[in-house]
Each structure stands twice: as C-alpha cells, then as structure tokens.
Image (cartoon, rainbow, N blue to C red; front, side):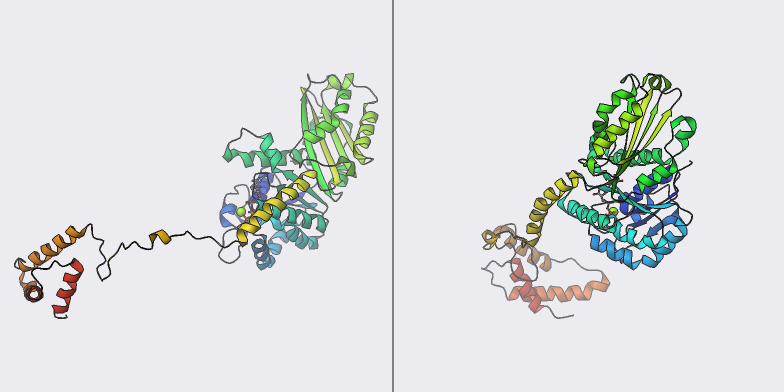
Length: 440
Ligand SMILES: Nc1nc2c(ncn2[C@@H]2O[C@H](COP(=O)(O)OP(=O)(O)OP(=O)(O)O)[C@@H](O)[C@H]2O)c(=O)[nH]1
Ligand SMILES: [Mg+2]
C-alpha cells in the first residue's frame, strides 16, 4: 500500500491492540502495549516481538482501574520506550489507538506524553463507550478525554461505539468489534492511501500536504465516508443541500459536533464520468461556499476524481480542530448521575441478612461426633446396634486378635457401667465407652 503519511501504530489496552491489529492487516507497521498477556496473544497480525506485556506485578489487565494502568506503564517505562524508539524510526507520525473506559487504554494521554520525546507528530485514535456501558467506563473515558485534550496532541480522532452499534445492528457478538475496527481503519486508509488516486483521473488533486494540514490541525478530528448509488443523484450539485446530513451520518465518529468550530477540512469526491459531465462548472465554487457556511469559514481542501467503470459516488470528509462533541457532554450528564449512584453504593456498608429467626435452631448436638440425628428413635436404635456389635464381634485375624480382645473387654466394661433401664444417646455411649477404653 502506498500511503501519504507513514504512520507507526501503537495500540494501548485491548481495544487499542485490536485496532492496531486491524491497521496491521492493511499494511501499517503496528505494535501493542498491554497489561494483559491474554489480550496480546490474540493479535494475530502483530509480530510477537512488537507486543509489549506491561503488567503491574502479577495482575492480568488493569480491571478498569486507570491508576493500575498508570502504575503498570510507569513500572515498565524503560522497556516500553526502548521498544517504541526502534519501532518509530523512519515514521512520519505516531498514531496511538485505545478504547477509553478501561484501566489500560484510558492512559493514552500518559503514553502520548512520553512519546513526545521522539519529535514526531502524535495522533490519538480513541473509542468512547456506548450508552449501555457502566458509569465507571464513562467516568474513565471522560477523564481520559480531558487529559488527551490537555496534552494538545496533533489531533485526536474520536470513534463513537454507540454509532458502531447503530451501524452494525445485526452483527454477531463475535464479529461486532472486528467489523467495526475494520471499518474505522478502512475509512482512515482511504484518506491516507494513494491507491485510489492512481486508478482514478484527478480533476482536482487532494495532495499529501493537504492531508497533513488537516490531520495535524490539533483539536478533535473526524472523518467519514458516504457512498451514493449513481442512480440516487443526477448531478453532483444534488449533494450540496445534503452535505450537512452526509457529515452527520457518515462514519463512526462521535455525534453532535459543532461543525462551526472546525478550523480546516477536506472533501474528496470520486464520481463516474457520466455524473461529472452533467455537473455544473460552478459546482466547486458552490461546494466551497456550502463548506464555509457550515464551518463558519474553515479552510477547505478539495479533491475531485473521475473513476472509470464506477456505479457510485463516494464522498470522503475530514474536519479538523473541532471542539469536544455534544455526545461527550451528554455522557458527562449520564456519568455524573450514574457515577453518584455507584459512589453511594460503594460507600455503603454491605448489609447482612437478619438471621435471628434461626437463633433457636439446634441442628448439631454438642460432642466430638457431630452427627445430626434423624429422630430420637434412630439414635437409640443405633446405640443398641453398636453395643450388640461390640459384644458379638467376630474373631479377628491373628495380628488384630489382641486389640480386638482389648476392645471387647472395654466394651464389656463400659456396658457394665451402663444402666440397663436407661436409653443412651450415641454420643453418651461413645463417651462412656471411650473413658473406659485403655489408651493406646
Ligand atoms: N471499537 C472497539 N471498541 C472496543 C474494542 N474492545 C473494547 N472496546 C471498547 O473499549 C473500552 C475499553 O475496553 P478495553 O480496551 O478492554 O480496556 P483496557 O484498556 O484493556 O483496560 P483493562 O481491561 O481495564 O485493562 C470498552 O469499554 C469498549 O467500549 C474493540 O475491539 N473495538
Ligand atoms: Mg483489557
């Protein structure tokens, strides 16, 4: 694959590793850092020597506790930095992937900060949790986002797992994340790859420097892709009034961006010749105007390509230097109420059961042989059987004859002390018998 920028991909945590693994499938050099050995072993596209296992002591994973993840990263820092230093040499930029919400990947700001020493642009690509995930995941994710924004990396791409759920509603549980990760990487790669450019005829070129400008514009970056069947529109002019809707619905980026906060962006359009022939010559001016209106004057880089034998129109969009989306503000509201409940639950002492109704129940008799009697009659019958068995004990083999004689004698002695008119419990009988049996 020929790429515009050579990215070195570093996946942190399980989701980060899975995304790095998907990037590796598309030919990107990738490595993975994780506190969990089990997560690392499943990353089939990443070579073993590019997997760094960084556990805290003997734990596997960070159990959604970012403090454990942080300590783990610090305790393996020399090893992690040495591995990454070798790996990133020759790259144009570092892309750190992670899922926010857990204990390992939520430390993406910490890792990114450590990697500033390599003097390469740093982009983070992170996922945010779905609505259904726990308050803990949301609180972790929000804290992590704030730290990432505070680090002022060259940009931060936010993939919304909520949108993934909507996009792949019928996907099986096993295929869900691999499918989503593949989609994210494919869309990113369509921007970063020159392959389509080679096969298409360029009317206006979106070049490498344009890509770099938008990608590294700081703040939050979104990208997306929409494909329309050639039968759906007559000319490209038809997409102008739909541009906002296309941006809002394309891709897996977080919902609710205020597009007017964007400082730069890119739109690349790939269309068949028949559509381009019908499109007005003013189209690009109109597109520029529409883009400016939606973004409140952001700089836009265009690409327009004629794709032979195509039956669809593809529109790829990137918007850079956006502010934190509404979806995260909503998550903050959810997390603060859910988080409060969770905090209260954790502060409460664990209630015990009131078992006073069981106080008067005596299920075991006192004594060395704690056998629960089935009923009073049973105990007496067993006691009588034991006495009878001891009296009528059959002859023992020669070696045991002596001790057998002794026990018979003891049993007889014990029986001699027993009151024939009284019934004994088995415990009483054994006690009496023991006290009469010679030790040894
Ligand atoms: N898109 C996507 N999201 C994922 C994937 N795996 C996990 N997630 C999301 O990422 C969040 C963090 O999960 P993990 O990556 O397992 O967490 P971790 O960083 O390994 O942290 P610990 O398990 O606590 O050590 C989850 O809450 C999910 O929302 C994946 O393969 N793809
Ligand atoms: Mg994990």
